[in-house]
Amino acid sequence: MAYTSFCWYVALSLSLMASTHATPFLGRQHVTVPPPSSPRQLTSDGMTVVGDICVDYTAEGYFPSRHADLIESIPSGLVDRPATLSVCELEQLHQECVDRINMYRSGELLFSNGGVDADIAANEPSPLQENTGGNQCSSHQALGDLNTQQQQGGCGHITSGTCPFGGLRAQNSCCPSGGGEQPIWTYESVRDSMFGCLQGMWDEGINGGGGHNGAMKNPDYSYVSCGFAWTSDGRLLITQDFTSADQSESCSCDGKEPGSSDGCGGVCTACSEPEENLCVDQSVGPVISPACTGPAVGSSFGCTCDDHMRLAGGVLGGCEVARVAAACPLTCGTCPEPAAQCPSSDDDDEDDDEQEDTTSTTTTTTVTTTADPGCQYVPYTNTAVRYQGTGGAKLRRSSFSSDAEYLSECKKACDADSTCGGFVDDPTDRRGRMCKPKKASSGYPKSRKTFYKKSNC
Image 1: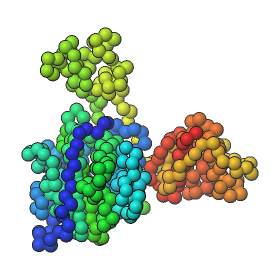
Image 2: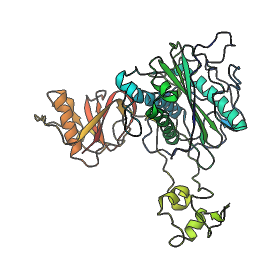
Image 3: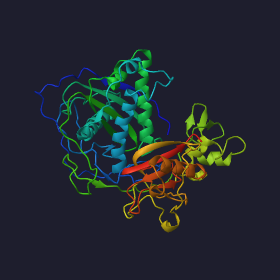
Image 4: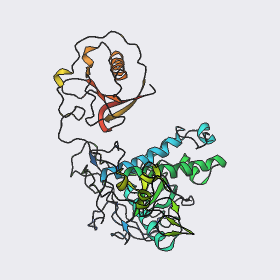
């Protein structure tokens, strides 16, 4: 989904927070809140990366103003977490937010014009750590901001500084966007909106920096937590809270079982698939014409999906036009297919095909060549792929004299298969270390495995 118009504000004057204010809510107190009213849907691009056990950062309340106590309920017209977004997807978005900012701090991401930030080139700051203990509190601030902005309009840092993060602090804010017929409430749409906003903030450095760009690259900051808030119709607000102070509370469910403590007062949650929602057409598409029957737009009328079908091939374009197909997915049969997001929980080896005959995939020939293959491979550590095998042979490490020779032959085998998008190097397989060719081009977090993505063939 294209990122809609946005504005940003930064609160850089919030340096050392006075201790005389009432202590605000930070601990993750679990209370019962009404569930979102809309059913879950999953409109994934097919390879959303989520964990199998997750910290639940779902909001449980909001701050009505700066330094106010937390109100442990969700304001009318807002939701704690969209029904179209799973707990594990929300956890991943918090991580993506921090990772993206660090990509700018390291110089990996540039200005949109291809330019390099002079401050980064001269003195690259250390990467920020995710303030996991503050993620939920940042969302409580964001909900308070969005609630006020829905009532009064505008955009600003209404509750910034309420979470007790301490130290030198700043907040960047991506003002509300989306909603209505263009909701931003699936993993991909939220991620893309967030990335677009962060790029816009970073681009402020093209003309000298300061403001949001300055907060993103400030070497004095050590931690950042991101807040997410939504209206019930998919309008999104995102904030980023920076601090220089060490954070004592850390949330993690790595290596834990569902129901275990997440370290922040909550419990770890098993990955669950969002429920499907009905695919619907927009009431009015992006085209206006005197021949259409939708609402009046000046001296013309908005075109409905029925109008596009009725007048296709003549006055209007039909489903062959990309923007019509996007506005009329039900009519055009372009509704996204649900895609499984959670790692397998009922198979000892998620990187095997479901009904694969593993006895036929062992190589017994010792290969001596170590010539580099034609394609390039990008390694993603601690990453696996759920099923999606090519059916090709799995090469055993024991058949080769060195790791380099083994990996070279794995790459060459993938090169020779046009359906191969990469391979998983799996040292955890009960039969011994082996590489497993995959049709996929990305995967999900899994300790000790490495996914080699095929590229530049």
